[in-house]
Image 1 (tube, helix red, strand yellow):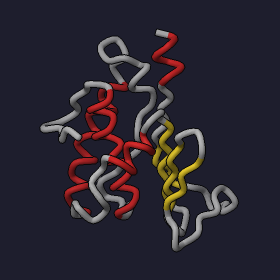
Image 2 (cartoon, helix red, strand yellow):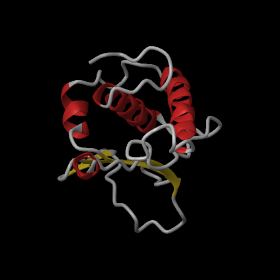
Image 3 (tube, helix red, strand yellow):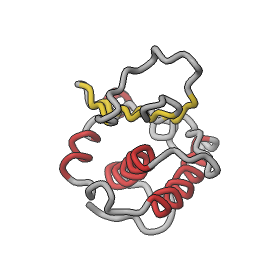
Image 4 (cartoon, helix red, strand yellow):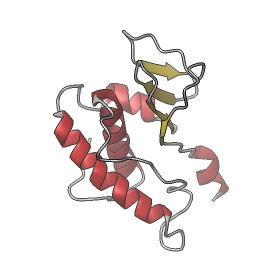
Length: 145
């Protein structure tokens, strides 16, 4: 159990940032920042929303296995993300049934907010990676990559 906990650190958040803009410096022409330690961080140029994913292997998987940007439409990504996140959040609320080591925290994803393509692309691909890597099925067919 300790091996799983130490090998897996998941932090997936979508947060509305406060008016303070000293949190992240993102070059508007490069909206993706990949840090060392397998951390992927996406923030739009106005810093309204961000996604932070820390999971061993995800950035490598994203670069090597995920389908390219613009393969899916924005509406497709939004619909799938809503389904995946809803099921994810249901599992977070049931730690007696689903491993709290996998489902550590809820994701604040609201279908009435326009997060943009990059944020939706990253969330969608993390959900595919997560389901394939940890043998989970959140909703419907899971593409195997």
